[in-house]
Image (tube, rainbow, N blue to C red; front, top):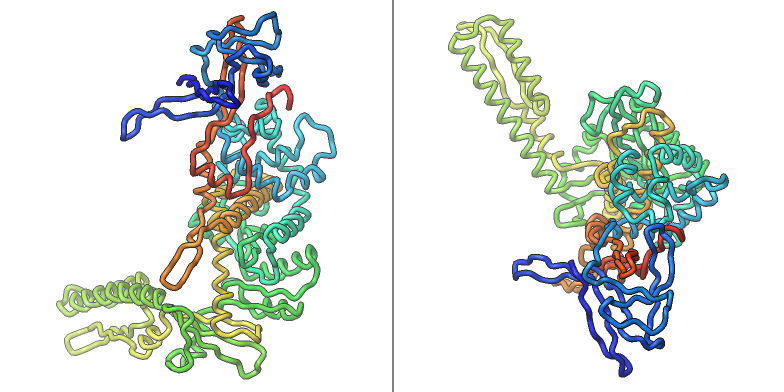
Length: 598
């Protein structure tokens, strides 16, 4: 690593600009990569050419100095603002991650969460403003999710957030982070209302159509002090752990509307009434359209929505398709909404509701393959048992029944397709089995099919199907919470801390979805066979990864009088980083403030 001078002429005068450079190995041989530009070290004694630069010392005391290389003759006189730098001893210290956490802070400001939390939690005097500690928690959840202890010991000291937020590194510890969780939790309702308003201002987001879904997350440990933690249906396949249930409401673009937490053994179907009351309490009564899957459907829930003059578009249990077997088998009346998707609208005699039969070829092929695989296994097992009995190797009827019961228990997916019987014959007991053709025909006709139910009147079958498919936005939100934002597992043992942890994850998702839609607007147009359409936008994860290599560092400048001066600078962004920052409408700061001046 070394300083490289760059000589340029301007207005008939010669100027020397310095940059910090390192040598790197590439497939094409060694190359020099610019880390950052230091600016102009004065190369002339003429005062009108001299440039002052703000530097700070080891104690963080800032001052304006005129820097000269020690090889250059300084201006005449004993100017206290002149410093001679030993260029050959310049070094780099205190490298910090900058790009991703700086982007997170910019998103935090765009959502005006800095102003919201200043008004909500900064009423009392504190060594560190609680609103800034909340920003640390949310940005960590976006960039590198970890525990409060991990934030204190590993993440925060490695980032430039101490400079960006004006927080001394020693001031962030797990105790202060826990106290911040306790302070922000009571403001959950106001936070949700604030974010809804900001999504509308920034993106024109509307919340007439609400997508509702649930998931679960498990806790590590006994959590004896948390009554919410119970054993229940685990979507994480961790039935050995106690869990809690999280309900999330988003709009058709994935913007979060609200969330709620329930006991871990709470049945999905029992949450709807609570959610309806909660939404009315926060946002008032309105004619909303609810979309959710069959796990939440019940006659009571649908009646509760109708009672509030609401509308719904929901999935139904597969058993209900039996009522529409004739329409399912009939090839008339189907319309193609996509090459692989066909739909058919069925009106009920009462006229209050409409059902939509849907069939997807990809889903049909998958279910057919699954049925074929299990059928082959069961038929093979039945054939082996049949031969064993016929050859006389198994004569005890009780053992035959136990063997047969074991085969049926191993293949519950297709057991109802087979008629199996142990019959006495002249030679002894024999096993007879055959496929129930009517059951097989019904199974084949319903493969790849599902049924939707709605009280919406005006929409066509294709429009209703498209609205229901937007439920994938809620599923995508949960995937983001569980993977990129690492909401699971829970390590907190107290109920309030667990709820606050979910709230921080909700804040992280608010930053994530804001970045997602900012990037979506930047997607370039690409020519296609049918015209021009937007290319796939850069994902939030890739954008954060791209900026994560942008760092800050202290350039240490030893001087001839034995002191060391420091310049805190941001490394030079690559072309891709510069393009992304420009497209997002952001501007990198020229420099970061010295610690003493924060």
